[in-house]
Image (cartoon, rainbow, N blue to C red; front, side, top):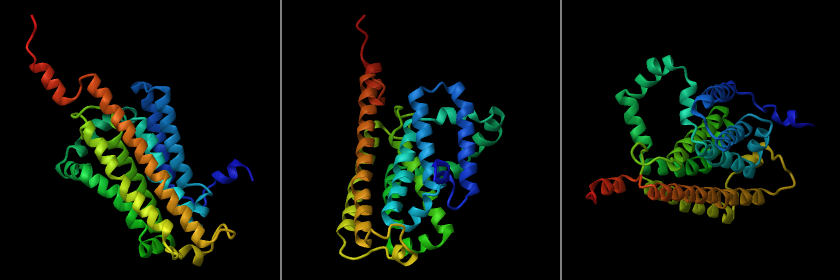
Length: 284
C-alpha cells in the first residue's frame, strides 16, 4: 500500500471534489493580485489539504468505525483545517479570484440583499457564533443523534459539513486582523469569544472520558476497525482528544487574537484610540 492508496476516497463525494477544486482555483487566480505572503499561502494550502484528507480519503473508513478516529476527524474539520485557512486570511485572494463581472453582477447584489444580511448578522453575532461552535459539538455527540448520524450517510455528510462551515465562520471571526470597523468584532471581543468556547469543550471531553459506560455503542454494532482496542479505551481516547487538543486549539486562538489586539493598540488603530488621538489639541 502506498500513499495513493490512502488518498483514494472510501466513499466518493462529488460535492467535496467540486468545493475543494473551485476553492483552490479561486485562490490560485487571486493570490497573484492579492500578493499574499508565502507563510499565508502555506497556511491556506495546509488547512485546505487537511480538510480534504479528513473528508475524502480512505481514512474515512476508520472515522466511521472508531470513536477516537471520529473525534480526530472532527478536530481537523472543526478546528485545525478552518483555523489554518482563517489564519491565512485568504478573503482578498478568493475575492480577487472571482471574475470582476461575476462579482458585480451576482456576488455583490446577493450579499447586499436584506435577507442575506440579516442571516449573516445573526450567525456572526459573537454570542450566536460561540453557541453554534460549542453547540454543534454537543449536538452531534448526543448518543441518539450520533447513533443515527453514523448509520445514515446523508446525516453523516451533513454532520461533517456543518462542522467545517461552522469552524470557518468561528475562526474567521476570531483571527480577523483588522480593527472594528471594518471587522465585525472589536479585538477584545474576539479574545473573550474564543475563551468562552474553552470550558464547555473541557467539560464534555471530561464527561466522555470519565463515563463508566459505553456512550456510543454504534461502533461496536457496526464493527470496529481496531479490534485490539476496547470500547471503553476507545471512548476515553476520544474524550481526551476533545478535552485537550480541542481546548488547546482555542487557547492558541485566544493568544493570536490577543496578539492582534496588542498590535492594533500599539499602532493606535483601535477605534477609541483613534478618536482620542483626533481629539488631542495641536501643540503648535
